[in-house]
Image (cartoon, rainbow, N blue to C red; front, side, top):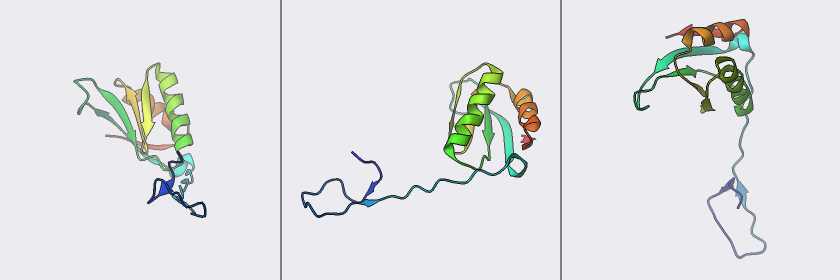
Length: 109
């Protein structure tokens, strides 16, 4: 099943033309124009703390690549979705330093 179809699931009409949702890939801003925020988050995580990086503007693939690099350097797990990177544990200072070395504008909250 094609998940990008809009308004209809199935048609028996052989001449029916499905409408597709156009997914517009966002252009990734260069690191100097990114305005990232790094903070510690404990809400709805069962008492565990995570480092949350927000404010990324760009494609999902670039977000995942940055997330993978940060998680590897910190030696922990995490995830990346909806313009946010979640790194397990309190790594605010280390991530702040890593992002600054890559040329990102970063603020610690």
